[in-house]
Structure formats: structure tokens, C-alpha cells
Image (tube, rainbow, N blue to C red; front, side, top):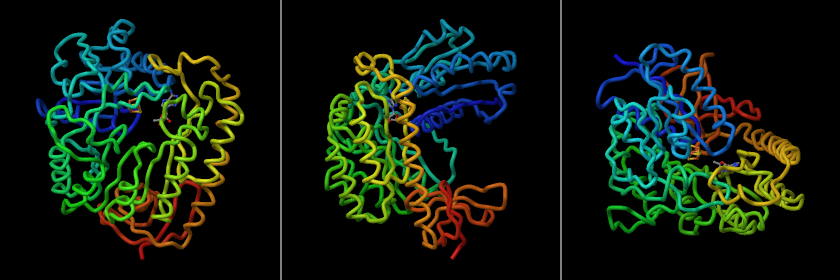
Length: 431
Ligand code: 5AD
Ligand code: SF4
């Protein structure tokens, strides 16, 4: 059997794209996955380009793979960096056999035998494509609900790499959900760049729906016990959605609400469409309806023109919302984005010290939050066997919990009492 080495960088959408590529390859000829480059017949690097660093690493990585690959093995570069660099990748690294963009995943089987094929059309429509089945995780399914993004945030390269936003027909999504529960999966993760814009545009149907209605349909599928989604846009978090989030028992009480900045003037130049007050209002509203909700966020520091006062606004939101998880980044100018052309780019040392301060305060808050869970009881869905006689699972609010146990726990949802806390993990025992 042929062997595939696939490296997946970036977000959950990329993880799903890798699964789709594996599924398509397997539909032609079975592949087994390997973690050793040297034994692979096919090497795929599924790239991310949201920040500059991983892009810079790509070419050194190709060099390493070229050195260790076995004779005749092919190398493909796919994903977001493939979308925006296209044939430049082959020019710079002719050892690469093919390049496939983040919106051309279904073409993986077509390019295998075409030397130096480049498929990066960002208007290519995969929203109705009937992908074959492949899932890495037996307990949780990633399911795309839309492709692309229309928002045009001035810092973000995604519209360039994934093209315009198209919703996937609900019939296709529900079919995926059904297939997942038939395979024993209890948890569904709905994926999109902007999930709560769902239903705005379909390329081949005149379906009238929205995200709230999709959540209701998914939760009606028998066998679905947990629903998560990522990411909603704060601007589109209307009251109807918050009501559904709060009242639907199958929707996990964890929500990622990307802040980006706490300064209303920076939010304006980021073209986010909301203010600091709106963001705080949405978080307050969610908390009022779901007091034990876990809220996570993304924050960028050092965006062009960010003053000390702007940064204090971000710190203020951190203080007020007390996020359960903060993904924080230094602003990284990206090609083809508006913000890359803005004057007043922030010096790296200032951005670094802001990032350090933000992260330090986040960790203090996190320590307090985690400690406050001591002695609580939570329902935990177990999905991973650890080497030291422990089994890992997640609470409804997405917190990682470890308990002593064995594989019988995998795929089970059990009540657990928390007996020890640390900043990153909770330890518990079955009740
Ligand atoms: N620089 C730094 N961070 C960025 N993100 C997106 N674009 C950039 C950029 N140019 C962050 C945002 C987004 C997350 C996925 O990555 O916070 O929500
Ligand atoms: Fe995902 Fe964005 Fe990275 Fe593309 S650029 S892989 S959409 S995080």
C-alpha cells in the first residue's frame, strides 16, 4: 500500500481539508498514513498563511523533505500559502510536484500525475462537492458549513486564499452529520470562517435559512449529543442566536468570540464592523443567559497605529470579559491586505512588550478561573488515551480533563468531579 505523509498547519478548516484530501486519494487508491517522511510515496504540506512565520518556514521545510524523501516520492504544497504564492512555489522549489490552493482540495487526485500542476483558482466552487469519507478522530467530526470569507478585515489574508464566502447546502451538512453519528460520533464541530453568516449566499440553491436554524436542524439529528462551532463573528451575534445558544442543551457552552482589538478606533481601521461596547455587550448577554459559559478569543497586538490607549482598551476588555482562552498574536503584515499598506506600522519591540503584558495578565486570570472549578462536577466526553494510565476528555465548556482509566472510557460521556487544578489542565475522578 502507498504511504502518505501529511503535515497540517493552521486552523480546523485546514484539518478538515487534509481529511478531504486523504478521502479523495483513498477513493482512487488506498494510502496508509506515515509519520516518517523517508518512507512516504506522497508528501503533502498543507500550509497556513495567516502570519508570516510559517510561510517563511515552508521553503526550509521543503528542503528538508527533499533531502529525506525516498526516490520517486512526490511532494505537494497545498492550503492557504499555496493559494497566494501559486507557481512561485515551484519556481523557488522545483522539487515540488504540485500546488493546490485551499479552495481546490477536490483536485488532489487530478494533479498527482501532472508534473508541476498548479490549481489555485479562488473562485472554484467546492460548496456542493461530494467528498469521500475520511475522519482522523473517531469521536468528534469536523463539518464545513461554508467556504471562503467575505468580511475583508484589513489585516487578514483569508479572502485572498479562500475566496468569497459560499454556504454549503444544509442537506449536505445534515448528510455529513448523519454519517458521523452512524459511525458512533457524538460531537459535531461546525466549521466556517464566519459561521453565523451561514445562509447568506448559496451558489446552487435558493435555500432560505440562517445559522440558528442550522443549529436547530443539527441538534434534531438523533445521536448528536454535543455541538460546537467556530468561529462566529461578533457583529453577527444577534439575540436570536444567543437565545438558541443558551437554550439548546446540545450546544456546548463554549464560544469563541474573536475580539482582535479592544479599541473602537482600531476595530474601525481593521474593518471589523463593531465597537468595544458592542463586543462587551454581546459577551455580557451570553454570560447573563449562560453564567458558566467559557468564552475564548483572538487578539492582535501591534496593529498599525495602535497607541498605548488603544492597547489599554484591549487590556480593559480582557479584565472585563475574563476569557477562558486567549489566542494572542503580534500583527504580521500580509501580502494583498489593506493594513500592510497603512502608515505607522508598530515597531517590533513595542508589539512584543504589549504581547508579553497581555499574555501575563491572561495567565493570571486563567489560573484563577481554573482554580475556581475545584470540586465541581462536569460531564466529560472522553476521546484520548494518554500514556500514563490517564484518559483525556473535554467538559461541555471545552476544558481538558484527565482521569485515571482505560480505553473503556473512550467515546463515553461521564460525570467527573474535579480534584486538582492547574493552569492548563483539570484532574478529576469519575463520580
Ligand atoms: N497578523 C496577526 N494575526 C492575524 N490573524 C489574522 N491575520 C493576522 C495578521 N495579519 C489572527 C486573527 C485571527 C486568527 C485566526 O489569526 O486574530 O482571528
Ligand atoms: Fe486557516 Fe487562515 Fe491559516 Fe488559511 S490562513 S489555514 S484559513 S488560519
